[in-house]
Length: 260
Ligand code: UDP
Image (cartoon, rainbow, N blue to C red; front, side, top):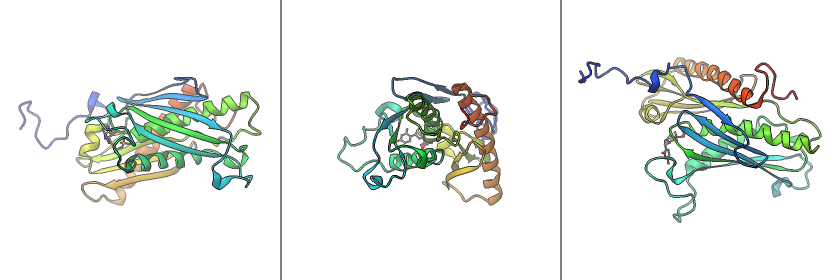
């Protein structure tokens, strides 16, 4: 027994007594800087600045193919975003951080899936996700904020009559889910993430379908049944996150984000 009278084998309560299926408070602050899309995305203590810059050309491998536009993403953590301080990418003479590369490719794939690239003029959307403060779930917080920032960047182009048709299929939403002491928990903070036996990141489409699942048994293998439970919880949580995204954008809950 611990001094508090709590049995030692009992899992620690979640911060703020958060129920297992509940995400942390989620908030999107639009027009955070002056770019066409600029959103401060917050999930609990995790804060990510998500910006969209528009370049009027496509990558060399797409040039002269008349195949539409492109979207790509970069992700980085500011040195003081986590503990201990992390040197800025590229400052130590070592190759780029593999974790950052993995995360930025995930963000790029997630956001590309929400766009009909073929109907875009030749242009590239650069999604930059910079983690200001990290407390678990930085990649999912980045995806959620980037979806809102991309919507704003498209509105910017539409106002300037630079879009032949509205190319967005909907808003992507993402969350993490894991097993901590055998219990499935949504949206792990750093403390939970570091003791999780399983950690999944789940990206969903506006219609609630799955776009990508990233996950691994970090301590012990998990069953198909546990996977299904976690996926069910994650897709439900994404419905709630999408409501907050739509609220931030002033869109009605039920309206698909492809309707203007
Ligand atoms: N983290 C950190 N420094 C690092 C990598 C991770 O402080 O270089 C912390 C940070 O709080 C992050 C958490 O570990 O959110 C979990 O990292 P993970 O790689 O699982 O990615 P995330 O959950 O942030 O998408």
